[in-house]
Amino acid sequence: MSILLLNISKNFGDFSALHDIDLEIPEGELVALLGPSGCGKTTLLRIIAGLEQADKGKIFLNGADKTDLHVSQRGIGFVFQHYALFRHMTVFDNVAFGMRVKDKKFRPNETEIAKKTHALLELVQLDWLHDRFPDQLSGGQRQRIALARALAVEPSVLLLDEPFGALDASVRKDLRQWLRNLHHELNVTSIFVTHDQEEAMEVASQVVVLNKGRIEQQGSPADIYDHPANAFVSKFIGQTNEFSLKDNTVDWFEHIGLPVLEENKIAHVRPHDIEITKATTDTPITLKDWQHLGSLIRIELTKHLPQGEPKLVYAEMPNEQFKRLQLNRGDKVDLKIRHAHWFN
Image 1 (cartoon, rainbow, N blue to C red):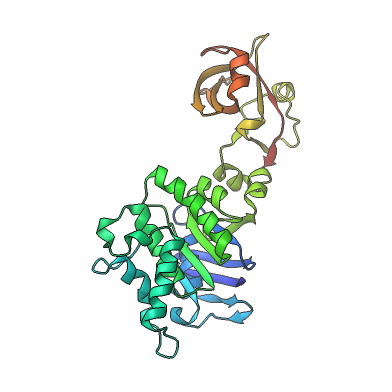
Image 2: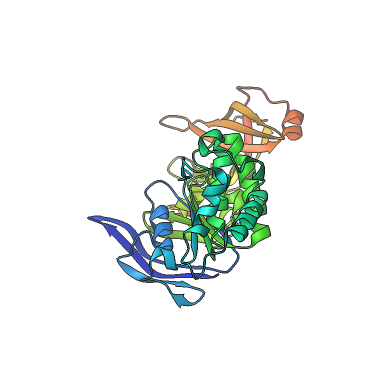
């Protein structure tokens, strides 16, 4: 099911949570709403679900205006961060619940409910726990049961609010890949809220970056990372270094390969776009430290400024390349910038 939002705005008293949001999501996409706390992403998700009413704007699902429809009439499944499972019900009964409370005209019989419930539990690889209670499950298992329960009502759209936020890092990583694989299998239009950039980039087919109630950029993870629309997106998505003429001379910019476009613009440079070599002449850059990230090395450099505190610069390179350079802490190094984005 496709989703179209037109001019969605929402205020809470004097606080403006969303400003004239226009957003189109094609059928079958897995979309991440990404942004810092308070940017409006959860409010937008709840408005799509019908759990919150927009002050103005329209919501279209598959071309039909659903703006004023109750949550129960939108055909939407919702997965909350803290699972919201019924503690007094078994796993089986939790998943079956949505089917059992349907209107009599649409309610399957108990045989059909049992068949579908077991099929959903097999889909999330937890049918062997069907007679357990939520308190007997791990966090990752409870989250998968919550997802199975949301899918039981055959939603046209699946909404997930920080679905992995309460889980340990290792469990979260496993569930990210699992959700992506499940989405490929089901092809249900899905939107999930997250403040975790890595999670959005790893799981989503499209990322919508929000800030202060506005959409800053929408696109594929690769497009958002490689072609940020503005300084906020550049700094929020992944790591970036900033170089400005306030801290450096034109000569030094040219030395490291940065053409000066406009004096008031700031160069944003990704760590992997910085090339490092051992210095053969005097240089203001010193190797401070590094961290091994598997096959990748993240390098901390110190840029000594004419005045003020030294500035940290981050670079990345493959492990083997770092070994060949035979660098030590305190070594002077030279930089070359391969690519930069310029923003005000």
